[in-house]
Amino acid sequence: VRVADPDAACRALSHPRVQFFRILACATWDAAGCTIYAPAPKSERDFATLGHELLHCFEGRWHDDYGNVIK
Image (tube, rainbow, N blue to C red; front, side, top):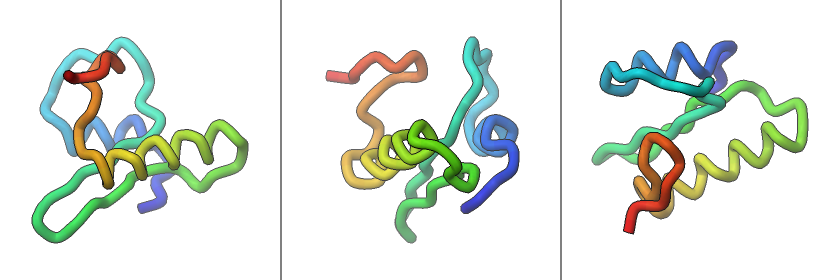
């Protein structure tokens, strides 16, 4: 889903919590499948972010809210 403000869109989808950084994109998944919320890609960083979220679609939640890998 293309969104103009991924930070606002992703915060609205997640549980309310304090964020110390701006959310660049997010992925949600349920029985119907995976949905990525991100802006239209305009740079290499945007494509890397999109790839990161796509990996969540395949691997699920593999890091915590701070970016640490969940073991």
